Figure 1 (cartoon, rainbow, N blue to C red):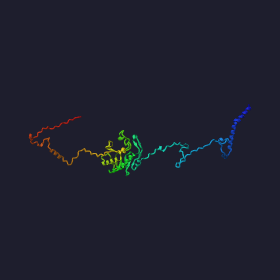
Figure 2: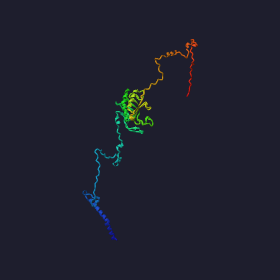
Figure 3: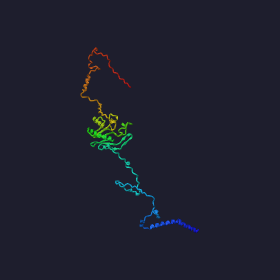
Figure 4: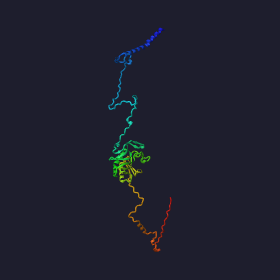
Length: 369
């Protein structure tokens, strides 16, 4: 029993624990040999791979190894700005930098580019009119328009300004036509009155409405910012000249009529309809075959009102006393003459016989209907 136990223990030690003990001894020896080598020798001696711990040699790969070319980034252009170093914000450690806010949007989405100015906008400079551009208007029913300006003043050739009161919202082409009309025709005409024009009375410009403000009517040119209603001109001496005032000289009003009808396709004033009896309507409406409308009656001055008191007695009239005597000298057939009461009446045969009856007056009867 004892001999068999000793044999079993020897067999177990040589079998299971024998091989593990030998491996542990070998690893300890390698570690001890590596630790005992100097630093210079260790630097010259290559470090074996983990799989070459027991000196089995390098691992050989089967087949041919193909190396792939790794793409490299493009070189940085010379005109690109230099990258700024990331500096931490004051009061925050370097490890607590705020995370980037994601990709930035294109500049076109952040701020839309301004539209290219039209040829009319480029031509309407500050030497002609003070008319800043305003955003386009797109209202209901087709109201509004594009290339709009706010006409505040018209600059005359001598650099004087004619104020538009209130400022008119018009299309650029309409504002240019008004400015040319005032600069070329109206300003010289006002000088013939002994003064210069200073203000333009704007009765109406842009307004989203139908014609003549009738509900359901066709859209007016005012709704398209293509019309202007002019009521009067004001001169530098304080005089106001209304274009529909009959007391204004007729020649002046006729000259304004011909100049306006020569420039604008539509001119409406007194006589066109009762909507334009106190102002002049101007617009640039385009019609077929360039059809134009000029309806403005220049009326004569109104007659003077007759005085309430009777007119004075003319100097060449005879005196009232003489006129009374002449009336008394006339014979009165109705009354007998008192001066001849003592005279002898003629004989009855000598009097003319009259068969007519004396005239009698009939009373007028009041009849009610």
